[in-house]
Length: 224
Image (cartoon, rainbow, N blue to C red; front, side):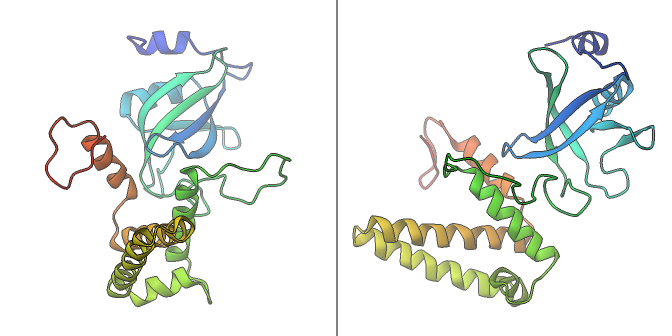
């Protein structure tokens, strides 16, 4: 790890304009939030303040992400790629990152797909959570998620109770397919509840991380 700002800058290969592309990633979820460009001054300000700064190529000025919206990016770590001509900035986002109000600037539909099917990974949780957050901000007619937000916490909590019972029944019946479906329903409604209650889901991930590996967790805690 570099010991000073000068050491950091010495490891970065800026282009002829004095810029380097910077990929911003949510440190908690792995979600890619945006792509920006930074010069030496932007990196210095990022390290000095702990809030991510960029250089605007269109406005030709330094700017801090969230300076008007309040949706800042708190620095977790900054690292160069193997050639030093690109940066990965891992952050803790404070609100949506995209200027359209979306969590990520890459929330649009794919332009094309390859022949290899997309594997089902935990990233789908973030994808679903992003849609849920969007439905809360911008309700849609006919949307079940928007309907749940309109009905409120009591309705959502009732659904969680119902889905929990369905999960138990599927498990006791040893029906793997039904259990997977009911577990997905339960997880979806939990994500809706967290959003409705204003609880950042990364708080849940943090609790799980803290509990993981505890030698003698309290009864009911999660450990591995």
